[in-house]
Amino acid sequence: DGLKTLLEKANFSEVTFAANFKPDSERNQDLGMMEQRIIAVATIKKEWSKSKTKTREKLREVAVLLGDPEKPDIIKPNKVFDDDAIYTICRLEESLRELKGYNFTFFKNHDTLAQDLLKIKGKVDLVLNLCDEGFMNEAMKELHVPALLEMLGIPYTGSGPQCLAYAYDKSLIRGIAKEMDIPVADAVFIKPEDTTFSLPIKFPSIVKPNFGDSSFGITEKSVVNDIEELIDTIQRIRTDFGYDKPLLVEEFLSGQDLTVGILGNPPGSYIALPIAEEDYSVLPEGLPQICGYEAKWKPDSPYWNLRSIRAELPEETKQSIIEWCVSLSERLGCRDYTRFDWRLNGEGMPHLLEVNPNPGWCWDGHLAKMAALNEISYPEMLSKILQFAIERLGIENGI
Image (cartoon, rainbow, N blue to C red; front, side):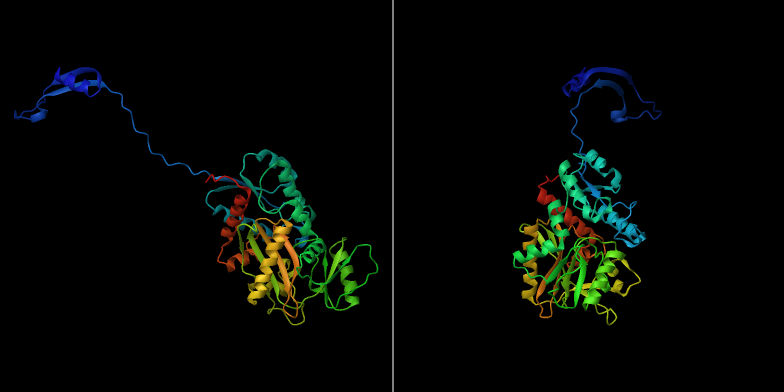
């Protein structure tokens, strides 16, 4: 009875005694508490403490949009995604998977892109838009991808369709820059139907497609020294590259060839990367000092050996270029990451050549090289693009 009372005070209930026995001992000595054994059965309800479980990290769901490797691309050699292009995509995928806090899904099939995006609407935090080849690998349709994302209401990284439309037109960018008192080289706009035109600029000049990127149509023969070479080059661009749109004949500047990268969104948070310069010291004498199609797509060309180095510039020149880039970013609506091409004239005065919103993102491209000069690795560069976009979009922190 005493044991039952004690157990009930300890909140046990339904106390019963199942057995009472003595141990089997031949020594017959006092076994203390083990001298007699009473087996009791009882029930108790205990309020258990909650188990401490590790909270699972909430990952951001990111859809990555790329060019379609199964479709032709007129910019690439032989118009296909070759081994180098596939390797570039693999490097991207590996680098993105190094980033903590994200889950990436890749979309490359443009035949089903619209349907795929409709399916993921509301299921992803944002899209990492790296489709700089353009929809269906057509450069003039690069703006179609962010336009589609906007129609579907899916947040995305990089510049919007209007900015891409501005920047794709080199002549238009020149006009905007001049309006902002940003220096540009003298140039002439030549329409496809023009058979005669005045040329109020000096030789040497450079001939380039007015619409295009990745140096499409710009080769060592694009730098011309007289009217005969000019006419030949115009004809070559029309025939060899099949380019039937307006051309830009621009004064060829002989000074340093510069590239400026900006990560972020001026005038808010942004990083101005160190200005890079093309090192032309490896070129054989007589070749024009340009970073054209051969430098990006022709491994057997002497231009393939060009490298980017940190530009040595007067501080005043450097600051002017950065300020102009920031102003252009705001004016054009560039977002998250942008590259600007500049060149100095013989007197050291910088002139704007091009603005590149959503520039090449590859591991060995100009943007990555400038990031490396700032001790930002390739995965870190991709991470910063995502972070700046998340900050701009005001996406709640779910990590």
